[in-house]
Image (cartoon, rainbow, N blue to C red; front, side, top):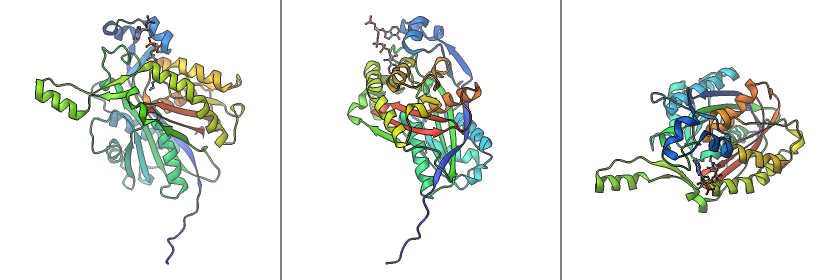
Length: 336
Ligand code: UT7
């Protein structure tokens, strides 16, 4: 038997961060009318004071390219050196081709393979875990991971359960090879039996049938059983976070920042209580001014902490994403 050449296993690290913040600031007062809500209720239940939406002429590709370019510039790596581009999104309006190939073209990443993943609010740590595997195995030297959403396009502004929560934006990490580990193992999982807890409905096939029968054109929108998702996240993610810390050989005392998916400030509060962090650990609260940007929320929240000087390059942060699927993923990262 002839052997296939072995490639040495190696480590990976995050070497660049870039974000795109959607330009339109939407205050609670602007959206409460159709859902009979109030600024006070939204702030008390979620922490959200405002959310950022992209204008009509800005696509998820525009946002992803901007964030991706900034991550490349931050790392000082040209797009031509990218081996892979992974885009995590649930708001790309085409079934095919992927958002990632459009990003690949716009960035001029001539040598990169490109694909999307669909893991909703868990998508960013899912993609970071994949990037780590590609680099560790020697498949790619540099992997660009982008979380991007334009959820304002997919939200029913008359739905009391979702209209106030979702938002738009993009965030990117550039990962490359490293002599020492720059990431802990990714702890991930899913429970597809609960797929109806957050779902984009109706399906395109159902919409086509509805149109044939009624002549009425509808659009799929996000639906969420908020309380169910809330209880699942609060009940399960503390253990997932503990496992991610343990897999990295760390305890809550060893990290400098906690950057959970920005789903709801009350979920973050519950996780912080459960994880018993020391006072010194900085907690990301980007949801207050940005809203819930699903796959983009973790890099956007980390960017805010860096800009504010609350974390610095080299710090250790615990990240966790959770949402539709129901899917989750957590890992410890070294801040670029
Ligand atoms: O990012 C993906 C993952 N997503 C999440 O993690 C989201 C998880 N879920 C949540 O964040 C929360 O469930 C929501 C913020 C979506 C909702 O908050 P809640 O505390 O679970 O609200 P609820 O559905 O239990 O409703 C509580 C009360 C009800 O009134 P009563 O029965 O107590 O009198 C609702 O009728 O609030 C009322 N209510 C509202 N009031 C004003 C429900 N929606 C609204 C609203 N405005 N939009």
